[in-house]
Length: 270
Ligand SMILES: O=C(O)CCC(=O)C(=O)O
Ligand SMILES: [Fe+2]
Image 1: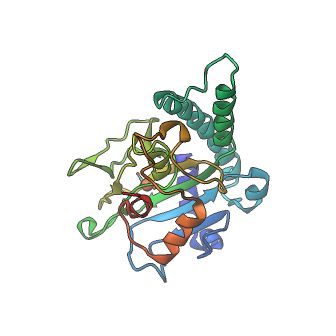
Image 2: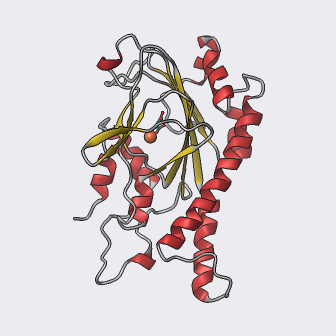
């Protein structure tokens, strides 16, 4: 995926810019830091964002060049979805929401229903390309942010750049070949009523090497309400977050371009 993503960014600009749009709702969006007209903050990054579901509807919009792009990306998105579901099963179990139980009871039916919602969930893929930067100290590849979804499966090439905020320090995440970094997103923080914390991260650039990463963002279906799991709420454990949905998130993005975990902050009840 890193290879075919890299070949997309090697294409001439006329080919890439066919996918350039300011419409946030299209199934494919290309953007380049060298040709931004609106963004107040410039990041040293080009990106290609692909909505991955429903596949039959979105696929015809995906880039048809390089010629193997669609085939490779479909395969990759399906494999990452399978991994995401496995991780969700483990996370639900860790929260005491046991979907693997074999005994059929009303409760297990509800839990299986929940897993089905994740299987039908939304997936967005962001292929990020960070060109070498002559002044790496003056900019960032990506400013500090947390991902909005449930989990992000992030694949990086061998060039370091990703940093995660740990206590008050930025910690560089060394790339491990063919391994994923799994980032907790805002929706999981809300769903777990704060037991999991979404992670603040940013990307540094360097003057020598370009860098590629592929982020696969997963959450519940686009129309779902994201709220703390009722299984985790009681009189002694009240809900700490307001119900939210993607529409609220998109509204927020339109209304301001601020970074950090600020969307999540707007959803907190305390
Ligand atoms: O390039 C990276 O390592 C991180 C990318 C990222 O945070 C994102 O696409 O949301
Ligand atoms: Fe991110």
